[in-house]
Image 1: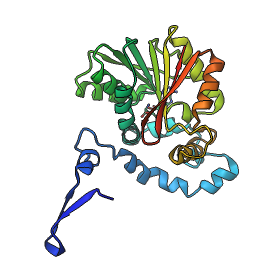
Image 2 (image 1 turned 90 degrees about the horizontal axis):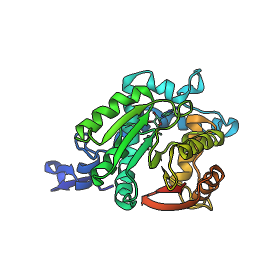
Image 3 (image 1 turned 30 degrees about the horizontal axis):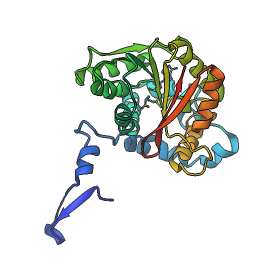
Image 4 (image 1 turned 90 degrees about the vertical axis):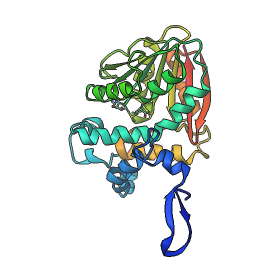
Length: 276
Ligand SMILES: C[S@@+](CC[C@H](N)C(=O)[O-])C[C@H]1O[C@@H](n2cnc3c(N)ncnc32)[C@H](O)[C@@H]1O
């Protein structure tokens, strides 16, 4: 797998991390992405044993199977579980957000709000690369202090703010760009449309809504990771699902957006963009 290399052979051989493992799999390093592996071990592998039940019933198979609460309420009740989930999000998203900061043309935009911004990672990566931008990371109240800590550690508290609220109850903070990393895929179609409309309301004319996801190819044949992620949304939420660029375009068109593009980011992930 090329995570370890070896000097010498036999009993006296020494093993050491390859450069990629040292960069991404050492939890003391700033670009660590192993949090997703930690969460897969702690939670998701065992829930996937119940995939047949999920397929037969359309019901979620995670902690909420036997409880009353929604997924985020269940996970966010205890700080260690919240931190484990947010670490997993960093693991899935870091390389996509770095690619987004590099590939998208931010020159026309002055403000950005990342909706469901978790630790503030998207805002941090974009603000680092584009000093003219002011960013806000918006998430549920228990997440805000964690985001604030990460933003301060990156030395960006002067240009990256935090805001908290419930994106189904509160209006989204106004900004020239609204980004949503793995947000729309968490919900059913009705709630996806609510979020797209809320983004439309928060944007000025010419503003951009950017969804960063493992966007499924339009023919639903190629992006195996995206298709599996969609099954993972069945396991986690029941009625949630991943989607294609064509789906995004259709939904955003219905909400009034005018122009669309898809930018490939890294591996199976892309940014789907709709302009108001
Ligand atoms: C799948 S995570 C994605 C995190 C991050 N955007 C990324 O791409 O790595 C979904 C995020 O949405 C947030 N969230 C869930 N429900 C929310 C709500 N009702 N209002 C605001 N944020 C919410 C969660 O706290 C979590 O940070």
